[in-house]
Length: 110
Length: 113
Image (cartoon, rainbow over all chains, first blue to last red; front, side, top):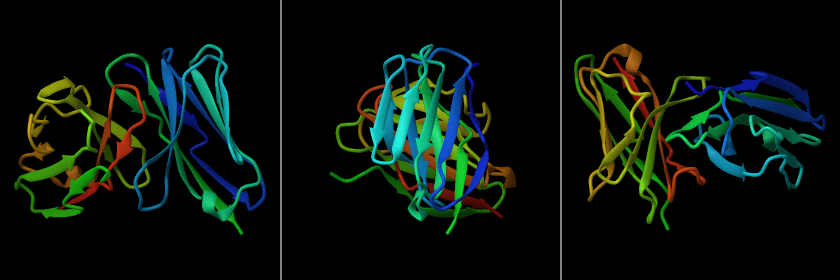
């Protein structure tokens, strides 16, 4: 079945450093979504990418969708303590369900 | 416009009892997804429903688990004869269409004692 893998599982950075998480799907995706979950909270939608090679930015966050529509990345520039949480990618392969990656947990040293 | 409402937020059940988790999607949303999350783990897909129909239940155990989304009322995830391994957070999400942005509820934390 379809699998969505995410690396790294954990990332601990100094405040102000950059952070990147990578997402790879075993099948071609029709779109990919990114979510953030704060500790003890629920996932919150960040963005959706649809087009091959698409790049979108939200302030310090940059999202990319690979040319083959099988991988994606989220890059945060100059992390802040408010960025703490787990970042999930979620892939839709035109099948019926949205499959979430295992997530990357970001922690930050002030 | 109220968000996705899940209740109860916390549920404690003894082994062998039934657990009923409710999810009211956002207004105008006809697609509902249920996910299960163990502590410090990812979101595991369980079931995808549209009004009155189960579209995909491939992530749901064949026994003891069932889900419904009736024409009127909330979506229900039912777990019969709960066991300790069922303890987890269960999240519901809704969307307007398949493949569009999903809005999550705050989850139900089920503890089986």
